[in-house]
Each structure stands twice: as structure tokens, then as C-alpha cells.
Length: 424
Image 1 (cartoon, rainbow, N blue to C red):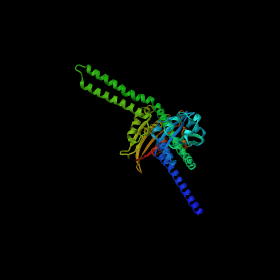
Image 2 (tube, rainbow, N blue to C red):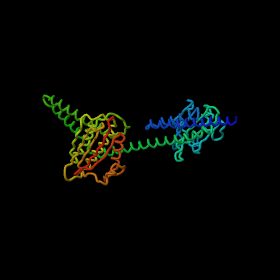
Image 3 (tube, rainbow, N blue to C red):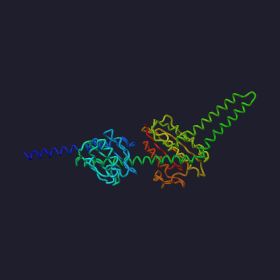
Image 4 (cartoon, rainbow, N blue to C red):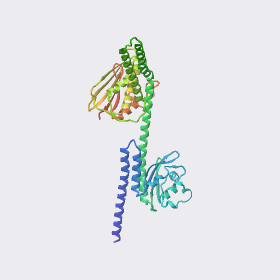
């Protein structure tokens, strides 16, 4: 009889344990699913961690706070709406901060029984709003405090040892997922900052050409307006010539505006976006922007742009940045060429499977064999005053669009840079 009861109890305990493990794995799976579906937004991950934690431990209330220099900031809240009025920031010395500093889970079976320094403003708030049992687990990465998760119940109902153990395991796995996402986001933000700095630096190299591009149409506007005034001074006024001069002035004014718009779009710091990119039009814009620089360097620019390219989705500013870098690099590589023609050839073609291939070929000094393996490495440069980031950023942009960027030396001289972007 006793053996039968013991066997039933053992089977029941095993079943309970299996159920708990399944719940734990389900909870962490939901967090990982949030990580996978929200690579650019941390809030859904915060929400998934807290939803899973409160459900796993049968809690009525939950909050997630992340560590900052001067305390803990609340980033997610679940449970009684009244508790949302709880201070969003817990300063150093507050009860949550003291608990986090211990780096150990803290179980408070009855919050009202706390005494002394623990009865701070936050304690008064949560007690008045009905919190009675509390479990606080610090989130640790390499023994550093990432944040804390607080779970609560509105009745004095202590959490069991099994619930605490399950929650600690869940918190450890959730911390790894959260920190990996945060680090990846920080890396993307750093890449974005570097890309913007590189874009501005490249535009800085073209300052003289840009000034020339703007001064030319402005000077032409002035000449046409002066001509219009002279035609008006005639007796009788030559209105046909006046109208033609004013039309030319309007056209030159629009040209100036177009140049300014192109410069603005290339140097502005804006979030990445996806839209249909007309590669041929984008290339013509960049070649127009760099035209004076090519002329000053004695470079002849030619294009061979395939009609009816496949439809490609991407960030037009980023892709123009790639083309700007490659074209400027090609022009600079030919500035020291003494013998032979200085020719820059830009082409687009459709490739199989459907996609676009852009090629930039120059007749400069070419690529040294020893530099080829390191050409796209960050901070590697063959220029005396180069940052060594341009080609590295270009490759990052192209790979983020699902494409590939590479370079090959040409015979008898020069280099060929090509990149592909798959069609959508």
C-alpha cells in the first residue's frame, strides 16, 4: 500500500518536473523568438522577458529594470496598472539598487515585514498599492549587473524553491539573449556612425568640386539676369530675348538646387530605409557630383548603363555612398598617372539569377598583390592620409543588402571594383 502511494507520488513529482521544464523552455523560446523578430528594437524583447517571467512564476506583478550609471531604469512593467505610478528610476541606495548590488536573488515572503532602511519611498508606494510577496533576481553578465527582474504577488504567498530555481535559470538565459542583442545593436550603431563619418569625409574631399558645381550655375543665373535687364533697357524692349534669358536663369537656378539636394541627401544622417533604387539614375547623380573633380584631375568619365535593370530594393543614400567612394577612389588613383590616358568607366548589367552588377574601372596604378587580401579590412589603407574605413564600410553596406563587393587588378594597369545586389 505504502509502496503504491510512494510510486504515485514519485510519478506525480516527475510529471510536475517535466511540466516545469517545458514551461521554462517555452518561456526562453518566446524570448528568443522576440530577439529574432525584433533585431532593431529592444522593447519587444523586454516585454517578452517580463511576460515569460510572470507566467513562469505565477506572479501578479512584474517589472524589468536595466542598469545605468546612477541607478536602475524601468523599461517594462506588467500587472496592476496602479503600479505603473511606481518611480521609473530607482537611484543608488534605493531598495532595488541595494538588492542588485548583492548580485544574489532576494526573496521577501512578506514585504510589510521589512524594517529599517528598507522602508523607503518605493517601499511605501508598493505596499500602499497592494504588493505583499516579492522576488528580485539580478541579471548578471560576467558578474556585472545588467539589470533586475522583480516579481510580486498581492497576497502573502512565498515563491517556492522550485520556482526560484526555475526563474534563476530562465533569467540567466534571458540575460545572454538580451546582452547579445544589445551588443549587436551597439555594433550596428557604431557602424552607422562610422559610415556617416566616412560619407562626410568623402564629401569633404570634394569640397572644391562642389563649390565649383554650385558657383557655375549661380554665375550663369547672374549673367542671364543681367542680360534680361539689358534687353529691357532697349527701345523698344526686346521681350523675346528677355523671356529667353529669364528661362535660362530659372533653369540654372534649378540646377543649383539639384546640386544642393544631392549633397544634402548624401551627407545627412538618416536611418536606413528600403525602397526601389534606380541604379542608373543614382550613378548619373554621383558622376554629376564628381564631374568637376574628374575634370580637374584630367580624368575622362564614360558610362555604359544597361536599360531595364531588375527591380532592386535598398537604401539609396547608402548605395550612392558606395558608388561615391568607389568613384572618388578611382579618380584619386589616377591623379599620379604620368603616362597613358586617365579613364574611368562605370557600367551596370543584369546578372543571373536576377540582380544588378555595378562595375567601376580605372586606369590608375592598380592594386598591389600584397594589398588584395587586406583591401576591405577596417583601418587598412594604401593612401598616406587615408582613414582606411571607406572600403570596409562599402563592403558592410553591400553585404547588408545581400550582395557582394570585390576588386581585381587590370592589365596592363588599373583596377576593377564590382558589386552585386540581388533583385527583390
